[in-house]
Image (cartoon, rainbow, N blue to C red):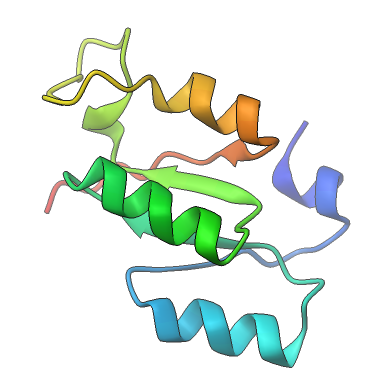
Length: 95
C-alpha cells in the first residue's frame, strides 16, 4: 500500500525543519507529514512523535537488516514505526 492509498492524498510534506511541519499541520491537518532525519535517531523520533507525523522518514543507512545499515544506536526503526502506527518512507540521498 502506498502513502497516497493510505491517506487519500497526493502529497507528503517531508522536511528537516520543524517549522515546515508545524505550518503544514496548522494549514491543513489532513496532509501527512514526515520529519526527515539522519544520524540523530532519538532526536528524529522525538520530533516525529511531537508533531504526530504519519510517516517515519529516516536515511537509508539507518534501516537495520539492510546492507546499507551504518547506525550506531540499537533501534530498529521499522519496528518502531509500526509500533507507533506510522508508515516508513526511507530517503536515499547521502548527506
